[in-house]
Image 1 (cartoon, helix red, strand yellow):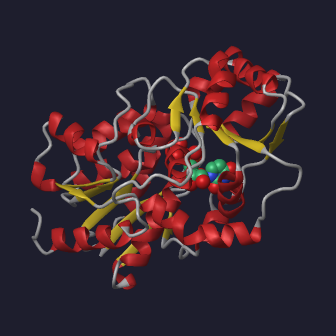
Image 2 (cartoon, helix red, strand yellow):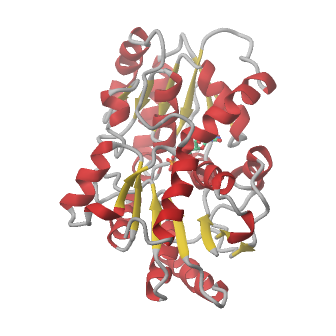
Amino acid sequence: MIDLICGARPNFMKIDPVVRAVRDPSRIRLVHTGQHYDHAMSQSFFDELGLPRPDVNLGVGSASITVQTATVMQRYEESLPEPLPEMTVVVGDVNSTLACALVAVRHGIPVCHVESGLRSGDRTMPEEINRILTDQISDLMLITSPEARENLMTEGRPAQGIVMTGNPMIDTLMRLLPVAREKHPAPPGGPFGLVTLHRPSNVDEPGRLASILSSLAGLSHLRFFFPVHPRTGGNLEQWGLEVPANVLLGPPMSYLAFTSLESFAEVVITDSGGVQEETTVLGVPCVTVRPNTERPITVELGTNVLCPDPAGIPDAVARQIGRRPGSPPDIPFWDGRAGGRIASALESFMTGGSR
Ligand code: UDP
């Protein structure tokens, strides 16, 4: 039995290709930690991706990082079956990723980390701490891009545990984009931009969030769709920040609605990790409002540019739109077949192949 862990929005797109590729579905126990729990952040993805209903839902809900991590640990441990799983597979960099990896390692269950080795170099990001610690205790580290191998080896991780399997989030995008575009055609009304923001460094400080909004106001020739993450929405409401007329706020979008809009956008302004990757594959110009990225390949080979200062957004947007590639770049191993390679790597590890 293999435990596959998911808990928050970006996890569902990464776990789905693994669920599809494992040859014997009866060997999977799908564990949802409940880190994201409302319909728009969780169930909607199960429905649209066609993910099976989780075997277990730990129902942890919202809390501080400490309480959430501790609650996932406690509840995941209580949920462990006898005999123990042969492996715990965690994805990405959310609190559930680290929490379940820690519990597994305490019980001697081998840990596999999908999307291992990404580093922003910024230890003030909670996700960076989750990545570093998860990788330190993972037995099988499945990577999406070449620099991840160097990052892991610099941190002393053994080469034989690192396998390039590629980017499973792109499997989901490639599988569902045609459906998404058919179900949600380009919105009428001409060119538009798309905005997502949820990193604490952008949305937890009123001055910073206000200056991002004011830069969007400066781009008055474009209208922006801005599906608002619950964290951002709560803060916008609490601080009563003025939303410019060209910015259309809405609730978080379903995966099909969002990816279709992303593919038709002139430009995407974001601080999301996954959105930097998806825009790269779509060939859509992206401006990432952060001083760093754990996904440098999106800047080197893709359509992404970093914009640390909100005041720089209008210039960055103009430059990126002017540089839109004729066709999307080709990123090795971001080819829609990562799920199969992940399933093979798990199989080979469990049969002793890559130990
Ligand atoms: N996404 C979505 N609806 C939205 C915003 C994002 O379906 O309103 C998807 C997006 O296509 C990508 C994923 O959510 O697949 C990114 O998740 P998020 O930005 O929450 O997390 P991060 O990638 O930053 O960890």
